[in-house]
Image (cartoon, rainbow, N blue to C red; front, top):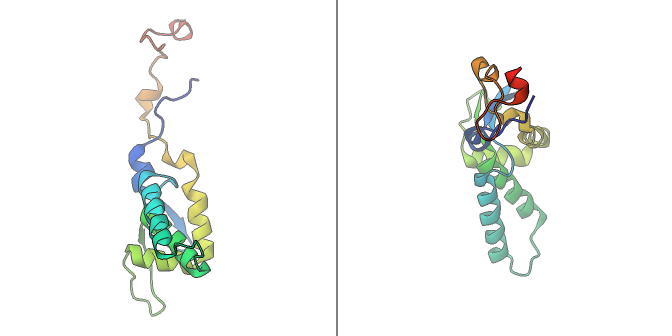
Length: 145
C-alpha cells in the first residue's frame, strides 16, 4: 500500500470535525491551521503593544491563549446549556470564556486538534480499488501482475 498523496482534507483542517465530549458536541479544527496561526500572531502583537515591557499578567496570557484557541480551533458547538438550562449560543467570546474556565474541556480540544487522522480525506471505496500507478501515470509493476 502506497502513501496517500494529499491525504488531508484542508477544509476539515480549518473548519473542523465534530467531537462529542461530556454531553456536548464541539467542532474542532486542526491546531496550527491558518486561522489559529493568524489569531495567535494578532493576539501576540496586541499583548506586545499593551505591555511593551513584556510583563504580561498571567490572567491576560491565559485569556489570550483561550481567545487564540476559540478563534482558530473551537469553531462551533451544540448542546451547550447554562446552569439555568438555557441554551448558550456559540460565539468567540463565549468560547473564550468556556476554554478559560474549563481546563478539562480545553485539554480535550487540544488533544483532538492534534490527531491528524481526524483530518484525513474520506475516500470512496472505488478510489481504494483503483490500480496503483507510478508518478509517470503508468500502472506500477505490482499492479500489472
